[in-house]
Amino acid sequence: MNLPYAANIRATELLERNKAQTTEIKIFRNGAQIVPTGGTYTLKKPTGDAIVEDVAATIAPSGTVSYSHNTTELSSTLLLGEGYVQEFNLTISGDVYLFRRMASLVLRRLYPVISDDDLTATYSDLDSLRPSSLTSYQTYIDDAWYQILRRIKNQGMGYEYLVMSPESFFDSHRHLTLYLIFRDFHSSLAAEGRFLDLSQEHYRLYREEFDSISFVYDQSHDTSADDPDNRTRGRPTIFLSRPRRLRLRRRY
Image (tube, rainbow, N blue to C red):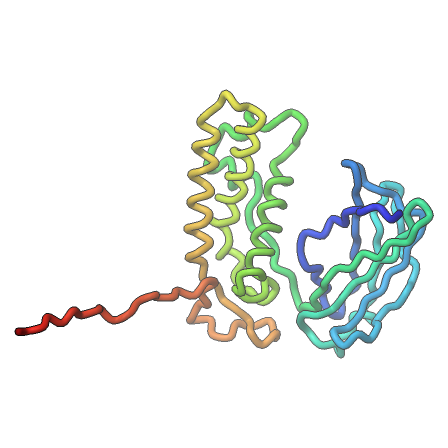
């Protein structure tokens, strides 16, 4: 029986057009990364035609499966945008598993803009509070960033790779990261009630900041802003209102 292995898919894979790059996937079960004994990789266009089909993938000793694209495979003749599909056929314990992941062909990625320094600028004692098992807060920063990427797409705010102003997400990313950090501190140090209060405060601030985000956008996929003097609002404001109801009094 095929077991339900989990592929570590946090967001749509972004492949930059006309650029050599490596794409990879990790498989997990029972808290451990699985090491497949073999695997192939396929990349399909939105039409279903294959760009690369059933080519051998590289499997690292850790189990990470990867494939290195060259510029010819991701040539400038390919259409930009959504709908590309990656397929990893991996052999695990004698059975073959197919893991799919959606991909987008883009001119550039959207990268985060915060680091540990931005967190300690808010709370100077974060360095001393950090668990000895961690050398930085990067895992929280990454988790918060992937949550934001998924939310951009799921809530119809557009496509993250067409955003020209990454600084627009600075405050929401920092607040969400601090929320994750303090929530984790509260979970592991339950006696420290202030961590719960801090986590709730930053989650509230994150939601407020995210709902008010506006950014410079590149609708035409040409690496230039559509209108640099106007910003696109991430979430449109919808006014739910109706005319006032008037009660007519009958006269006798």
